[in-house]
Image 1 (cartoon, rainbow, N blue to C red):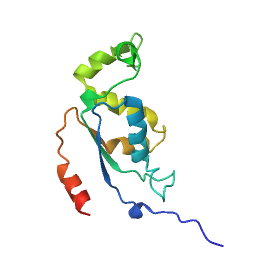
Image 2 (image 1 turned 180 degrees about the horizontal axis):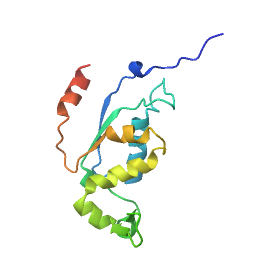
Image 3 (image 1 turned 120 degrees about the horizontal axis):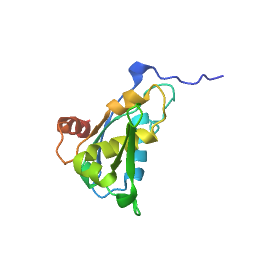
Image 4 (image 1 turned 135 degrees about the vertical axis):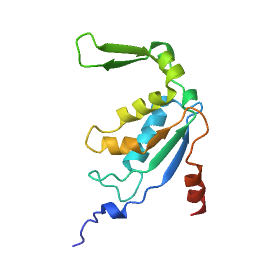
Length: 143
């Protein structure tokens, strides 16, 4: 009888992925990014280990929403104190913090467990097309 292979933490190899958000629908893009961060695209995936890859998202300010969501979508935050509810419209969030839109969408697609923070640390979002990780992608192309 064969045993099931259980990968060890030292066996995990992390790749780098570049995602261009220019003209992409936010939710569809976020599910793909979450899949890369979790590591479900790898053949030796196990749910109890953090097997995901590093993801760099560029052009976050040019992401699209479908339907009437550009006018209707709002983000809620609460400080925990009475009267501490903050409501921010999508248009304002896009003008002030476009990176946060992608980060919140991806975080919503990840399972809520103790691996979530580790996975979110491997997500780097930039509003423009310049980023400091260009050498990582040059090395990845050579390998």
